[in-house]
Amino acid sequence: MLLTLLNNMGAHIRGAGTDIIIIDGVEKLHGTRHQVIPDRIEAGTYISLAAAVGKGIRINNVLYEHLEGFIAKLEEMGVRMTVSEDSIFVEEQSDLKAINIKTAPYPGFATDLQQPITPLLLTAQGRGTIIDTIYEKRVNHVFELAKMDADITTTNDHIIYNGGRKLHGASVKATDLRAGAALVIAGLMAQGQTEITNIEFILRGYSDIIEKLRSLGADIILVED
Image (cartoon, rainbow, N blue to C red):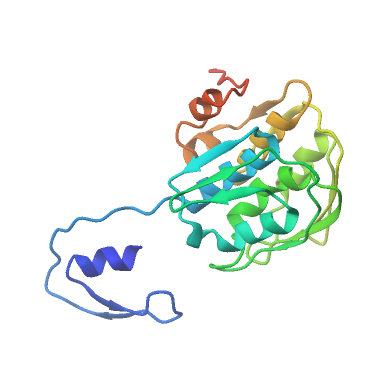
């Protein structure tokens, strides 16, 4: 984390993980070696994808403790996976059940994962809700998924979905980074061809996503204008 890096460089900062950060000024900082932690949102996105369409996929470079709230919800759905020290193997899924999700500050369910998990929720049997307490207006992906025949709506910025309906390919638009990730997953789930525009959002947040998905057997291409 950032405070660990700064303290290793000679800073005097206290209060990591609390509401109050106390900084004692120092004359200068010095160099250090620091390992960047894995991106928990990228990891959660690929875990959602693996559960939605995978036939058995291992996601490497994952810190379980950073995803506990997310993984707890997957387990509530019935997602079968094996958690290792720095990876998660996601099995092929069946008979998932619908759940309710409410986002919360860390270590709760991350707002940045409510969109990527939505296509997976659409594979489950039953009715559920998604409530984003961090960004209440984060619902633009709902209207794009509805174009793909998803049974999903919004009421007072709460998302209501009924799972179990097949998705069909459509022309959709990524309105932001995480909505774009949701549409990529939905496109891989859907019957027929899906075209996603505004992909600069997706490419900005997910390094080499096209190559990674193609290596797994996905039929996906990047069309240059």
